[in-house]
Picture 1 (tube, rainbow, N blue to C red):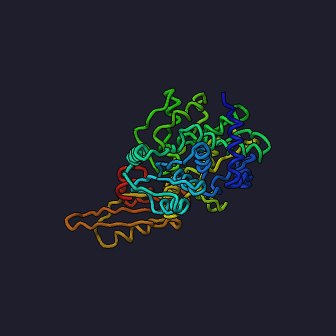
Picture 2 (tube, rainbow, N blue to C red):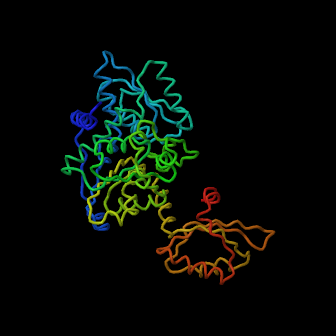
Picture 3 (tube, rainbow, N blue to C red):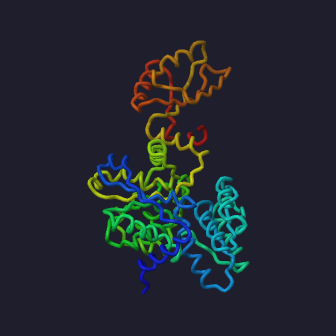
Length: 412
């Protein structure tokens, strides 16, 4: 039987020739809020701004070390795994082929190319990841390459466990609880296998991709019917077989499903207050503290900030979702009388803290009323109670479409 902790320590030691340990930092802001000792394991400060290069390094070093002629490495990824593999291809001086969906943002393609340089080639194929994966596996078989799974691989899991090895050394042992994000399960399987029962665990998943919770309910990995890709670093339809085998005995209460809109409030908070840039998946563990407040008071908690590959072009979307979750921004369909002065009457209803963020009006010559799409921002959610009362009193027919998924997606 293999000694997993010893192998993880060996992997951690080997990767010190490539990059230093990521910091374990006490966060004063979170510690004060929750009355606990909150430390962040800053995987967002790795050379590729995520923990993914750990698993790539460990898997690749074993192949390179045991092969007379290193093969071409192949992977399929639209994000952090691609960047980790690219970085390690250049480090080991081997060739790599990285398959990415055609829809991958140019920022991610550019970073992958930067990390890999001349060592890699990038293939853009397929609109959806499953198509990309099929193409990558077919190419790998054709050229006799070595395929590098993003999480469901024993060497990858062992490499991700180096996060736990560093935590143990930096903290001087195990904390009371470790909070981690879960996608395919490589990180959580590795860290939990290393620490075993020495600490408690909370594993956080995005509500649009809670594949671990589904697997725990079913007793085996199952494929989700739909996955929302906002938290793309953890948006996985099916947890891995090997990773689930290391997590199958978890109490379902050890998992938390995180609302993606609430997650946006944490991303903005960490950016504005702490100056820490986190991608959605990278903020999952910190956001989960909101659900653990009663359990963690007076204890030492380590949250794994798993990644910081955030494209700032997404910032308006993050702000929008955070405002809607917090109740300080709403969208209405308003029936506006088609008479002079109607708009002025409406504007006088707005409170001193209400601001119009969007206004679209379509005048219909054959009708007495026109439809208006209006977005309103305010400083406190309670202001909307007064606004809607004023609208009703003034006879303005209106409908709140903020939480209507069909209308919101089409109109907003």
